[in-house]
Image 1 (cartoon, one colour):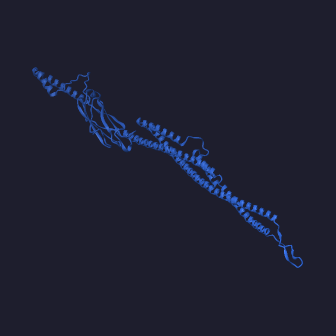
Image 2 (cartoon, helix red, strand yellow):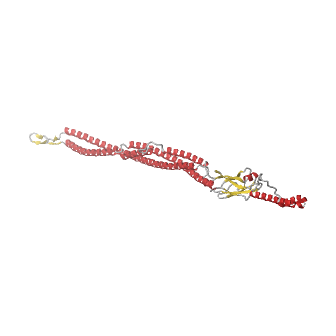
Image 3 (cartoon, one colour):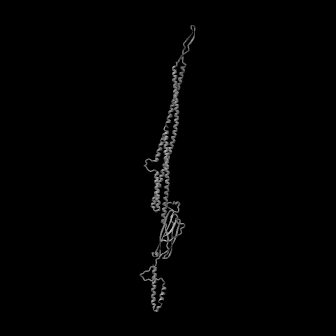
Length: 457
């Protein structure tokens, strides 16, 4: 049992050592150090992702988002290692506790067996004392026996005699009762000694067996002391492993949340790109416009985003001084909703000279996406978007007079002019009729030339 405890203690020490430093491992940062470094890298990468989103740099956004994903996966692996380390440390701690319990049992067993040794020793000592007492008795009886004659003379034998009256002869020799009694006592003592010797032998064997059984647990107290120290050490290692696991778990949760945030940024970027590529103004060009005309310009835009636009406004950037009237309610445009606007514009002579007018219309608003806007609970702030577009419409050119040609530019009706000329020539008389006809023809030709130039202009 003691050997098993010693082996178990050694195993617990080895397990605790392996938890702290795997066999053959090159010195490296702890799992927590690695986790903290990964979390710091992930935080930096998330800041870069958000900055790239604001800057509309999709390539950088995707590259830095991949770094967050990699940190998340690496932390998940570190967490698995930390959980395995905790499992190993807990198993080592449980084993160490079992070893302590077994060592305590061995110590108790040693105490029980030691009590048996004490009892066996007492019996042995009593047997030795009994044998010694018998030996003393035998020795004393032997001395007495040696000092006691084996026989004694009997009483004299007297009988009457006629001559002398009584004749007495010496008594006959007979066994000495005392000697005989001593012999019996010596025999009894010797028989008792044999029995006492057997008892002593048995007591000696019992004592030897008890000592041998107890000595199996002779190191139990020391083993228990070592087992307790080992258990306490392994429990400390297990607690440290659990603390490290918990801290890595918190870091993993943080970075996993950051990975979710950059996943939102990817989707946000895709939505933003899709909106900016698809959103555009539709312009209704007026049928005709000339200098001095006030024309109503109509244009519309559909919110192609998956979210509504907040704080939406429409402005005419160029020409300056124009206000757009739009059917936007409370500054919001629902996803898929179309907004229509009108602008009244007075065509200038400068527009007629250019032959066209450029109108730049701009929509600004906010999509509820981007940093600080969980996609599952979009709020009325986020990413500002702008949809600006320039349209042109034609303006009829003004009439132009060619200074090198003698062209009549009077736009009065020919009939009226002819009447005027006839009145002026009425006083010339009949002889002036041919001249009147020629003059009227020239006036008509001039009016036709002006009409043709206007049409060409």
